[in-house]
Image (tube, rainbow, N blue to C red; front, side, top):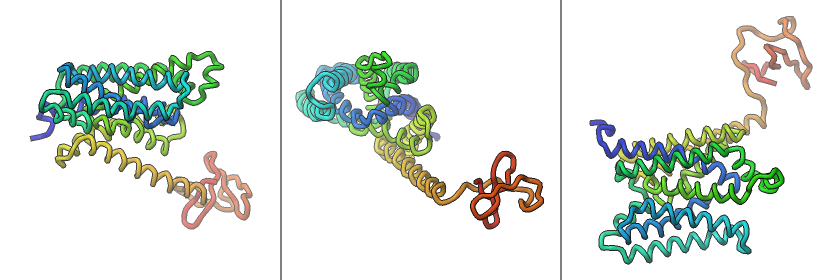
Amino acid sequence: MSFLDYDFMRRALVAALLVGLAAPTVGVYLVQRRLSLIGDGLGHVALTGVALGLLTSTEPVLTALVVAALGATAIELVRARGRTSGDVALAVMFYGGLAGGVVIVSRAPGGTPTNFDAYLFGAITTTSGRDLVVFAALAVAVLVVTLGLAPRLFAVSNDEEYARAAGLPVLALNVLLAVTTALTVVVSMRVVGLLLISALMVLPVATAQLLQGSFRGTLALAVLVGVVVSTGGVVVSYQADTPSGGTIVLLAIALFALAAAWAGLRDRRRAGGHEEAEDHLHRHGPGCGHEEVVHDDHLDYVHDGHRHAAHGGHYDEH
């Protein structure tokens, strides 16, 4: 029997797909602003919201959403207007959210701590049809903001002073991005868990940055990597009987390591020589009919707009 024959696996794959699409589109701005760990901070704040939901028998996803959005707004306002630096405000939210969640959940009815663990470390196979509806609505909201306002968010993330001089509403855009980050945290918490949320925002973007030079290229590749690791991680966790959240993150780290190794080899090759030209059906040399150009101690031959030079048994691009 295939894993797709199970309803819970189909729901898990759809949830993973939504997270894989949404998380990197937010992460690309957070990495640009060097706020990669804000997802962790908001994840801890969301713990308090989950605990409130469990204590009051309210839907934890919705209470986590409200508390995380309020926390995100507070962090951004303190960073912009307060005397406390952004990292200190984030630290206060980080520890306060965790402490609040632990204290509040201790007052919840018996058996609740088991459910609490599912939000901490992820339990994607427990995703219900109702959860999917909520996650889909939140993911669409995230994509509309991050893609629809991409030029403005990129300008603010890249250089706030320039964006302010250009007349952009910097504070409003920063608050909007912070609230969107909170939405992503809530979407992701059943997939990888609140303690691992930042990984899905940061690792696909970090991997894409190693392979792409432009913002658009990085964003597109990061989304592709996010979808591959989130859905692939769910399948691997089912086959290997491992926790889905940890499996997804380890898969993302493996792809990042491969990309880093490939980028290192590529950079050394560029620094030490030239890229190999495509195969030739003839030999370059005196009288071959191609233009000759003196290059240091040898001749390059102009071929189809490229300058080729013989090196050993092949030709390099010069």
